[in-house]
Image (cartoon, rainbow over all chains, first blue to last red; front, side):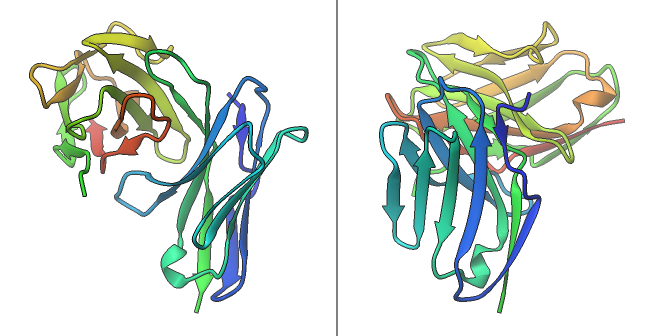
Length: 114
Length: 113
């Protein structure tokens, strides 16, 4: 099942610089996209989301961009901090009346060097 | 801040045994989910639960699996006869009415020997 793809297994950036994490999807029925952050031995933590009717959503240091025509979204973290080092998962979903399952990408390990 | 809790954090069981994984979702949430992550693989959807019924299940969720909300706070996943390939992290999640954002628990690591 390759509906949501994160092609970069890892990314290393310097503290204070921008981190850009990418995600591609194939299912045009997805209407909502989410980013989760995961530390070892913890569950995924919701970070930021975007509806398919928007192209940008910003929350503090985190911005998600959506390019529907390219079926591509990206998460920008500015400025990056060492505490941002974690695995970042892209997820997508389709609205359903009685709950919506999330389809996850494989994750990207972000390392922020101080 | 409200959070999803899961017990136990680690469960070791022998092949063929039954296990019950427990979750306490966020109190005012109405939709409940189980996901699993086999080591080195993606987080995969297992089942969603609403109004005391399964609303959707994946191909993984076969007759060996069942879910239950036995009271107003707990949500359980039962595996009747565990197999080696059931070894994974199991995550419970919940969401409010109309909310897309699912909130995950810390997970239970299930090891089947």
